[in-house]
Image (cartoon, rainbow, N blue to C red; front, side, top):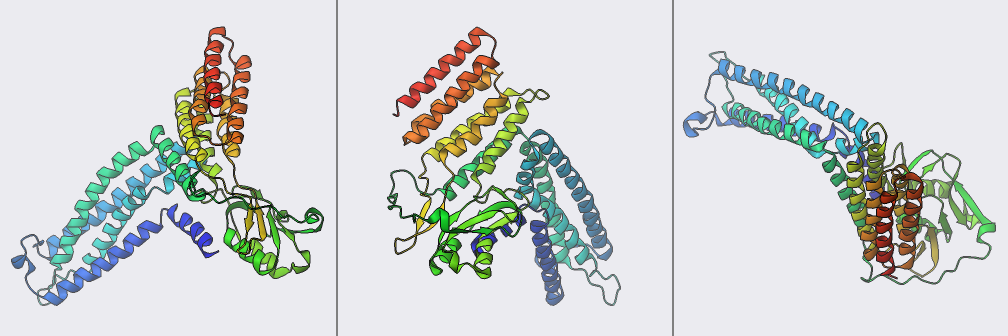
Length: 441
């Protein structure tokens, strides 16, 4: 359970603009105290020993640090304004669900943290400069580090300008989301087909399961962001229960609705109900932690927005289809786990329906097919994507899914495309897709 909770906490911290800058400010404060202490303890003319150490008196040091501090506030404000504009543009062009991707951009967080930490460092060093003759103190080493941070901030500013311009390009956005989708596939389905996949054990569901189960209801409402499978297995084993999970990550659960069905109602109590609810991590929005469909929906949202009459950008939709086809090829080569989970004594303990290739294909193609019915280019690219995915499938169910989508796309073209020659082009691509599927049968 701790691992699941930690995953949610890390996701929250990673998608915030305050966490990384706060860490950098703390490091800047520690650096200022360290350099000042070194200046006070050495009590020697560092400029005589090291030619690179800053060597100006109290007034000049104050002027330098004051300039650095004032400049960093101005630059940080400008960078923050640019970031807000980028977020607004991303929300309107790509969809509000992609804002989280921009907020998780570590580069932007480091840029903001660099400016703020340099500002804080300069202020902390500035307060120690004493110009009185009897007690004159100029922390030459600390001031030198202030100049180093200022130069680093200039480099970071140049990087930020380039990064801001490139991060809002649609190809970059689609590539990042596709990479996250592939990473989630590797994390949730680590086993490749044909590589040591264990055989499914015989099923032993009790005959009176449906009649004698007891529903464990959700104590809160929200999106299921993660489910701790190990925690559920431990609960079922320790209490000699059979659990059937009714919802998977990505589903919205309403307080009072069935969360888990328990076979062994006589052992259900308040503690058990609480422990089962604690195995489910709920939140206000969907995340990519265990929700594979979430990343697919992000790509679909970009494509659907591009196909809207107000934007009419089929090229962006085609780019999304290409990325979806690559991700589905990756998923098709992964072994989908059995819904039946057994304990160490080979006793059935948990039933949890996994996300299947058919579910992901439906999520990827349905809305694009529906909104792109009138676009010849989009229709042909959908069929081409099916032909690309087909060689990577390894079972009849996956190929039947592709065949079903190819048929729906072809039928939709008869109503959405009025030109006969365009329909003929679609028909040719449809036949190519069917041939690719049949070669795997």
